[in-house]
Amino acid sequence: MHNEAIREAARALFPGGVNSPVRSFRSVGGSPVPIVRGQAGHVFDAEGERYIDLQGAFGPLLLGHAHPAVVEVIQQTAANGTAFGALTPAEAELGQRIAAACGLERLRFVNSGTEATMTAIRLARAATGRDIVVKFDGNYHGHSDGLLVKAGSGVATLGLSDSAGVPAAIAGLTAVLPYNDVPALEAWFAAHPGDTAAVIVESVAGNMGLVEPEPRFLAALQEVPRAHGALLIADEVITGFRLRYGLSGVLPDADLFCLGKIIGGGLPVGAFGGRADLMSLIAPEGPVYQAGTLSGNPLVMAAGIATLDVLATGEPYRRAEKLAAHLENGLRAASKRGETSASVVRRGSMLTLFFRPEPPRDYAEARESDTTAFGDFHRGMLEHGVLLPPSQFETWFVSAAHTEDDIDHVVQAAHQVLREAGAGGWR
Image 1: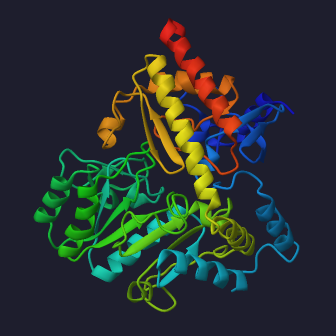
Image 2: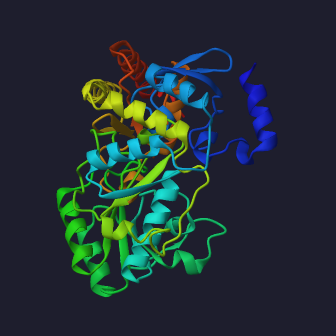
Image 3: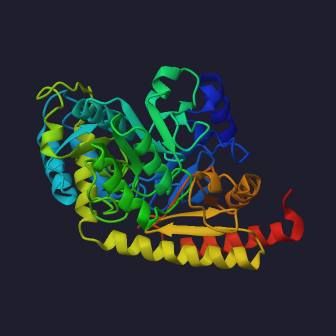
């Protein structure tokens, strides 16, 4: 089996040769790597090449690839059937664990983070009787129509469609404000005090690279919408159970929380939940319709339970964060020695190397990063056996299955690649 043969077959079948755009490698150049196997902190391509994996399936694999406990329970569960379209005991068990860890009174399982955020917004609109939703530039909440929106011409204007096929009327129900900008949030509600159903935000921004929320911004998020009768939706699809066991704790006073990724143990999953009075509006108990043939799928629920069993010990968090801190320090040193204009942002086991001198505080600053330099760096690291997310604007993920040797290898590779760049090896 050859990598190029797989790529050729995919190009003939799938738009852009992939089933999710970032996998195409178009933002970094080169060709996508067809992965056939993962083990612990590594993945292997079709030709048997091994890579240290810091892409981590974009977030769910805090325990690494093919964790024995997760694989075993999936196999055992599959032997009894893969889908029923009916209530199963595992749904209640995983739901109880998530609710207890996250302080949710009620929740519902869905099949993706996109479904979770989409339905949370529908619920917020029903609960408030309002239509407009506020999001922040550079935050990604899935690909539902109302969230594929870019900023308008001012800091307090309705959004514009950011994808073909999204009607302007739908885009116009979403306002896009700058991240970490308290005056913009206050200006929006001053101009539209009774029109906004909800504000949705990533608890820690991970889809423009890792950008930290500022304390003043977090305080305003929990005060300003509520003062005007709007709900706050915390998108914890990435950060839930990633930064610690349960929610991140960044926005404790949010009304609704959206989860995904880790709670499914690497299988497709999403969930949203919050106060009982809000969740009672979901059908069949209330008028807000939501349904899913594979929601609460038994394989997913079993994988989630097995994953949370391991995470509940706390050791995976301690280990992954220690390794990530090692990587952070190594990347800082490599950037300095390579005389590269770069900065590193880390939160727990998540981090981003930005090709800009200072860490960005919003999407406008993140876009100032040298994406050409990142593309060169990405290709150089791949040649050294390190698989990074194929975009400057994706977060790197360290797992508890990585080793000190893995991180040492990544740091040494970064030193070499950046040193070669400083010697004129790029461009």
